[in-house]
Amino acid sequence: MNNPKEIFVEDLKSGAEIISFFMVKSVALKIDSRKKEYVDFNLSDKTGDVNAKKWDIVEEEKPSLSDIKEGDIIKVKAQVSEWNVMTQLRVLKIRKATPQDGLDQNDYVKSAPEPSDEMYDYIMNVAAAIGDSDFRNVAVTLLQRNIEKLMYYPAAAKNHHAEYGGLLWHMKRMLMSGDALCRVYDFLNKDLVLTGVIIHDMEKLNEIEARENGMATGYSAVGQLLGHLVQGAASMQELCRELGVSEEKTMMLQHMIISHHYEPDFGSPKKPMFPEAEILHYLDIMDARMFDMEEAVQGLEPGSFSDRIWTLDNRRVYKPSF
Image (cartoon, rainbow, N blue to C red):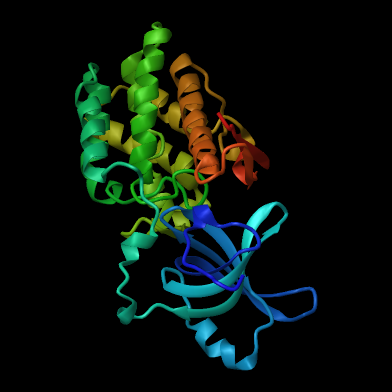
């Protein structure tokens, strides 16, 4: 505790005292059970996210704390603790980074493990090779029209693939898995499966609001009122009409979009009603779960458990020692 050191999120250990830089993902002034004000932060660096709290605010701290906004890089001195089996920082000192610190904001944003242009090229090559001309036109058109946002957009505001280029990374791995599963279940229409992967989350580009560094800042009005499933189905109808796609094919693509969350509780008004829509759901959920599992074990000591992961039903993930 006498020698605090700069450290990354993935290396935080309970009981340590650290001094480090983080990006602010969210910040809110709240009231505790004693009716005293505190500041609740969600912080991040390239290795992950961590919650932090500044308790016992004194009057002279309020101006500098109120000046901290989402997207700022801050330097904190903090004690690492656990609360509800989750790592948390108790902030002792805090200040905004200055130009003299020589920091690059992009170094504090988590990114997909592959360059966006390479992921985009892979996905476009898959789309261009789709045999059915209608499905190919839909997939290629959507990719071409959304290339600028796809380069940086996350696949979620929080949770899985909430990172720079996250939507492309999610899409690419689903395409890889989908191609493999179509070889196992060879009765599937591969063109329809691959098209479904490319289109299923495309309206997240309009549902989520995100900065060009890939950090989501919230949800748009259409995202809150309609969501990417409803808006995706509506946009698909317009695109298919423009491209001259048949009513049946249009309806099937729309169904894949609205059913891929599977349950009404997660936004799907219909469950999948044909095999390609069913496999799309499992491709989606498998990639989300594997992303969360991979995130959970990164930085863990062999033979230890992660914090509880909300998206994994509050399970703690074990990293084996062999």
